[in-house]
Picture (cartoon, rainbow, N blue to C red):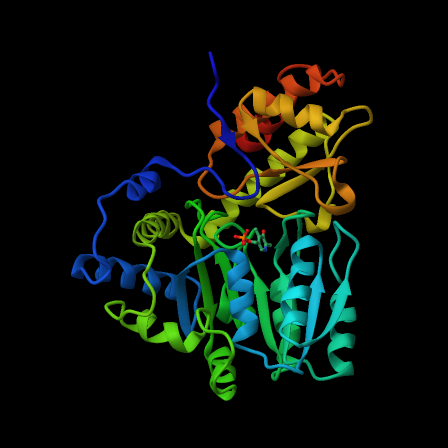
Length: 381
Ligand SMILES: *Cc1c(COP(=O)(O)O)cnc(C)c1O
């Protein structure tokens, strides 16, 4: 019998039944008062949940478009931008910014670590930056940045827009614009919100909106805040067609998030992640990220000596679990396992069981039940 396939990559993440059901609903016109109410409700809920005093944008597109949107609305050609890169997705901002004609400085950490706060502060003191980007969790490394501490430090640099890429973090790691002094935060629907791919969510506070206003007409059209703001304030207005079923799916996801609460949701992710990481280490899969900087949304695991990447991942798929390969210098040396969103303890037990079977098939014998046992012990605490 063919097993079901669990999608355990760092996005798209598993979509629970109640969210899936929204994708299959009969379409409504975007001007239908019933849809307008739903769309407005999602936008307003997200605005409140993340403590945004500006505008929350829910727009068709992916996380990459949100990166472009953040830059487009806060910088103009010739401006200096500081990119804090902890890996592959941090680096993606470099091309987005250089294509726009921005002067880019990059400050990097080794993969699995994060840039020390003091180094950041020093860099920011050296010249004026219009904006600074930080990925909260870089999906390539599984390391998490201390965005709250960075936000506190940013109070010394009030002219620099603090942009946080939350694509692999938001609704898993804890985030709050006001408490953390974040000017722009964004994510995409398919990560910790557990919705199908296709929507970006971007929060811009008053400071970011003031920056947008100071720029006049910008070259970009679809991602211009000014085009979308009227729609976000009154969802009966039209600029470009909303992704109706995705908005409903997000509405259901946001309902689940609200029911759980953002902080308890983070605590659930934290407990699960630490239990998973301990369980995986017990079968010789070592997380790349420093113990002090491990994300709660995913783990990037280095193979033990002798386990071959292509064979391991093909066997995982055969047994019913898809995991992602390593990126950059870690291609072939590790795999990436998502554990974010609306997954539960039973999903994780299944995943760990498959990992145990596959390690045994790949010439790295481990006792059956070892990782599962460690995980269940931790979760019972
Ligand atoms: C996935 C991801 C992106 C890109 O999002 P897409 O939806 O694939 O465009 C950007 N940043 C981070 C941190 C991500 O994990």
